[in-house]
Image (cartoon, rainbow, N blue to C red):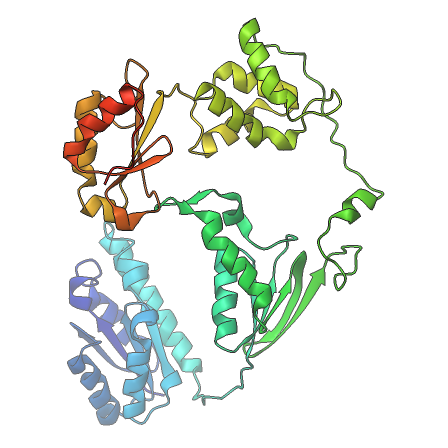
Length: 436
């Protein structure tokens, strides 16, 4: 057995930390090592030619390369061995860059000793290497996609459109994942449902996709191209072939979940009588037969309170928590999640300036500067007279008309010169037509 060992400098990435001469000398002391070299760039054409010539000249039958990760150049050196007439699988690579010189940059002595050990390990393993042959294994056109979130849905659709038979497994009763719980997406503030809903509808419509909702992967066995998967489908207690999603089974179900929530004391927070009347009027619309509203109406009630006060007062949040019997933390979670809600008083008119790509390119920053100058406030602030609140948004959904400003519910195609007159009109509560 004749093993050739090559230690790479990697253009200083290794040699500036690891003493490659010591590593090469140590490798030369090992049994069966017939040749040792250190070279500046083993992956270069010259480096590969060096290995190729040495194999032929010194009759080497095993090769060890001490260099960077095999993820980068294992294929390169295997091809070199094939050119020299050796089997590509009698090659071993010791990673002395990612595992030595880089992580131990400040400890060169330790990095050198570790590089010696890794190279010695590669030499020991090369003694056991045997020539191997490549095998061809047929791979079917069936694919398992685990998880029905937006990524799983898109993967299933792409594979299905490419002609693969796809089995999409989702542990929840419905696909959509976390994205289905969002109102908008980062960073463009696009409507989450507008993106997700069409894709969710495309899944059952694709003839190549079989959806296994309310199911989990129970077991996986086999190997690449021949996996066997067991899917555990949870009991639904209905005939899925006949189900029309009418919801009648919920009413007929003998098992009902009634959360046992301790009733908090009535209105522990102090609320002025007039304000209490306003809040009770809002919540009364969602109750029935004298009963308080259900906790599921939280978002609708917060929307009405926000519309009534133009923001969500602290006492209103506490009142909502007690009336619905839900934790105050949950009320704050919802109130701070949706951008439509505000915990700070807003002005009579809400000015939203679109800073999306199209509007930004057409001068939105200058329009923002002009609004800040005219109103005397910065984005995110409210004027002292409580007339205007200024905000910036990622997109208003009308890029072709940019730059665009949304004041209350009215859209205006803007230029800096129009700002002052527009502000005056809203300040005097005049009827304002579409600005373009």
